[in-house]
Length: 113
Length: 117
Image (cartoon, rainbow over all chains, first blue to last red; front, side, top):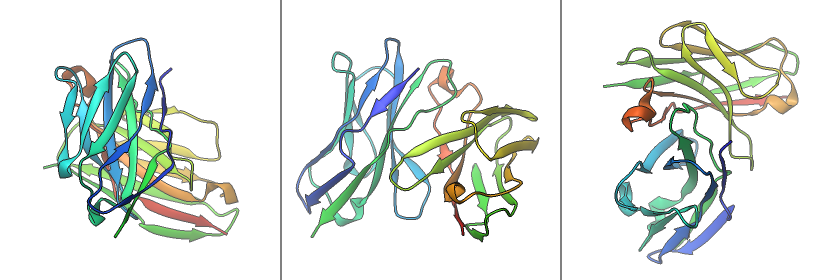
């Protein structure tokens, strides 16, 4: 079974500072990896996804994530955050042939003006 | 383009009352459909998923049930609500066998916030 760990439940960051949200997954088989963002009182939106190919994946709103197979990680990064990035971020691995995504517990990103 | 609708957006119900949350998808056929619950501080928990009409898989034992009476309609129900059923319920859809084509992106509805008093 797939499991995922988001190590930080809350991350406060000053505006225009860089941020990294950590995600580790456990799997011995090929996986696909997703990051979703949830703005207050809304559903989730896809931020970016890794399926294959380049390990550095770029998403919307200036976010990127790097797939590291040896460390089973898929950390999310942004070089300079904005107030509008305040949201909850979810990491989700999926396995080929499995139609379900397993979500992490989420990381709440708070931007400090 | 595909759209997903969830209603009601908010609901306040007394303990022991019934529940019905509805979700419909437009612009696609044979979608996979999902119900997730988001409780405070607990992330997203998959409750049910369906790969076709009348086909429901339950992920966790609970006080809730799901039905798929039509291809693009997914209903979450309860006969008697418990306090612990409070939360934010999210419906989502994806392409059937989307992972095989690398396109299994979940698209979520706006959510239904349920408060049980």
